[in-house]
Image (cartoon, rainbow, N blue to C red; front, side, top):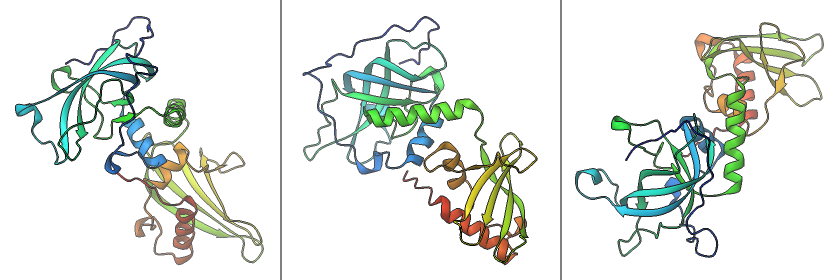
Amino acid sequence: MRFSILFIPLIPVAIAGVGPALAQPVPVPLSDQLVSYADVAELALASPVIVRAGITRADRVRGPAAEGVAAGRMRLLVTAAVSNVLIAPGAMAGTLQWLWDAPIDARGRPPTAKGLDVIAFVAAPGNGGATRLASRRGQQPYDLALVDRVRAIASEARSGTIPVVRGVANGFRADGTIPGESESQFFLTTADGKPATLVVQNRPGEVRRVLVAQGDIIDDSARRVAPESLLWYRLACFLPRTLPAAAGGSDPALSRDWRDAMASLGPCGKTG
């Protein structure tokens, strides 16, 4: 079982069983479902290879290779024909193999895997170059909405314009010229060290504005955080819900603006 990347022009490969013979989708156990945007983003960003493929064979794995399988599961060696490459560092071989811990029914039988149309999230090769799924959620039934979401996430990540947020360093708050007007700025730490600032603007009679500015100057280029975007994910899922004391959390007004900003972003929503 090898992870193969061939640097040759990609040749489309037909999925065995496409059409009337295609197997019925297997109900995905709740623990395996990608419930939220954050679930998809986490898996997509962790997977150097993501493909659509049709399963042509699934063989039960026994012995030491089947150790660690959870109750209610059976480990299968899946062979699949790649039909579409969503993400890859180069052209893909037409066939991939991976291990899948499939759910079993009341009779102890796994689903009929042959003919299933799936999206496979593949991790970097392990020891010996073996192909493996990025997580237990790494095999999902094919779904066009999932494909569209993965492509959008990959496109934003590839652009290099979305900061990889690690935390918050410090912040300050300034009152405006009229009662009730204020602006707080929170300086975020990022993976590449480039500046990113979370800005919270309060103005009487207006909805609070939560913006992100990149660069050393806070100006009109600061943008709102769109829900279910890569920027939203990196803020909502990687920033603390309460402002740390070292970043100004001892200031009640500053801390309140931070809490309000986190509330406006909403919960991360990761379920895995």
